[in-house]
Image 1 (cartoon, rainbow, N blue to C red):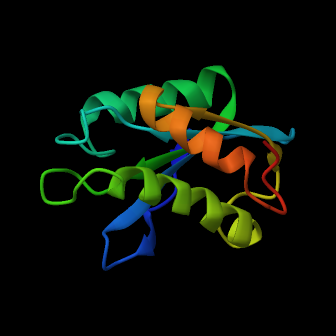
Image 2 (spheres, one colour; image 1 turned 90 degrees about the vertical axis):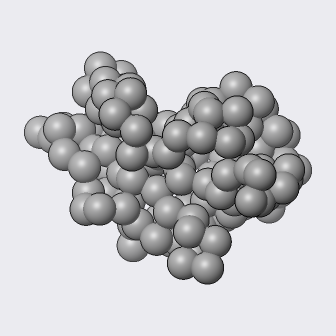
Length: 135
């Protein structure tokens, strides 16, 4: 299983980026899991060892392509910044699928994980007009 590069940057100003975990040796069409890490909006990042292990396990065991999102943290960035960052990653994936995801990624079959963040981002995504992401 491989991780694609040091991270794919979406917005340098906001330090918004994600890590991509892609199972190896799989030619089948794969679902996409968008992973929003825990940390109570205050600490930890996608580079934390525990989250690296979890994302690798998802990619290997499910199997699926995992997008692990690094969003802005509080208290430097007040509430809603985290939700906006995470939603913006979905928008980025919808707009740039062919440039950032493997060809076998199926964005019409994606999952969000990360409790509170996933719930609110999913609600917002369901009301959006994405072209490739299907809620």
